[in-house]
Image 1 (cartoon, chains in turn yellow, red):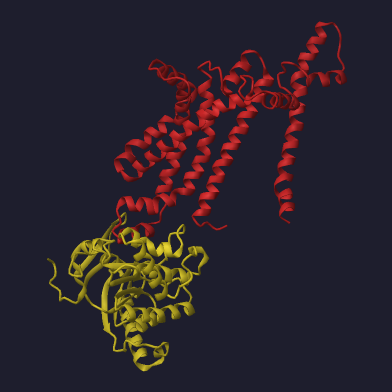
Image 2: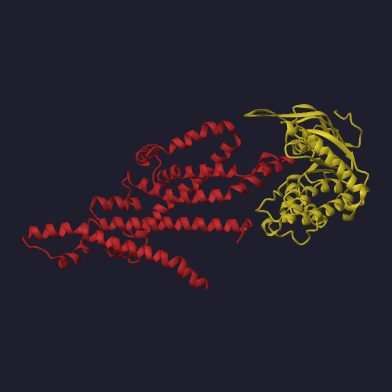
Length: 267
Length: 294
């Protein structure tokens, strides 16, 4: 009904805006966002705090309602898409339920969506393997490290058949060594599952290393200042971060972020 | 190592406090019961030395304050030396009160949980019900208990039920308050997660709100079961009940049997402690099954 976008466009935002009504008056979180996410894309949203990157992700997920403009997810409204379980969401914190074991946490969406016991077991085994947590299914969340907990939460988001993965700074709280390792794993996972990924981050190397498309955003009001299509190949060893191509894109992202910040000197 | 630390960490401090309290108790026994002995001596026209007075203060038949050993002798006599079916057995009376307590506690727990569920899921309920729940507890139970008994008697309900209802009246309150807080304890991120799965309110309740509320539930159950016992005892007072710890207290006060009153009080305290321990045990068991850190 709302599918004006081409068939392989997953997310299509047109002149999207969102204004929160707060006690201190209205706050514009997003304004004039135009963006297409194509099937199979890995899109990173990068920008300083308050630039609306998380808000945009939450709009896609129907966790926030836009106040102007239109947005479609798989050609549907975000609410319809959510009701069809179109996406898996990975939050900043792992948000595992502490009274459930890791495999029971992965089973949570499957139980809600009515998968059979046998199907649940099969999917738990498959996704645990995808995030390299085989053998940890019977552990409780507190028995795992922060990085393992976040991998478990990714497994939970992969367990059901959503083609879109929304990730809100999933590795933000982890140290750089663990983060590098998880970035590498995430790329392999993206390649293996052919999912479309929207990824919020505030790390330039992370955004450049992971993405096929980088969306640079700036705050007050939250808006898109640059969209960079990455020329890097899908196959990316960690060493690619030393190449001139990589550094050139990183430079452009940095410039975009600096342009967005320039008004602050006058504020 | 384990036993030594139990001795040092638990028995030693508790034992010290108990001994101090017993010593203080004996001091008060002498102070409070001495005037009676002096009066008796004065009436007989003699004087009494402190050395003569001391043992007498601890062996009166109806002392102002019975000595600990008198109370424990009475407790021993009415629990171990009497058949538990006897009307003179404290175990029999404790059981009468306990059955009303458990029934009232059960009803109070169910009522409290149901009210909390309604309050958490319905804004109108939240606004309209909570003030009444709080108002209900501002009425002194001693004032309302006789009314409940009389009214229920008039409609033909007597025996265990009226006492249990007074227990319910007291015990549902901490459960409502605790469970409202418990069912609202999930973090926003956990609720958002359920939203992304398009989970129904029922699924969110059973898979998130209910398990999240368990620590709150057991904390309020511990409070509730202790005041359930108070409710059952209070319920026995205005009825002229023939059995139960409350009846025992009432009979004791009619006939000036202070030793009997104190024995009943200790029995009530023991029952309350036992009930709280049982709930605490259930708490530990449930948390362990929910994967809590050992």
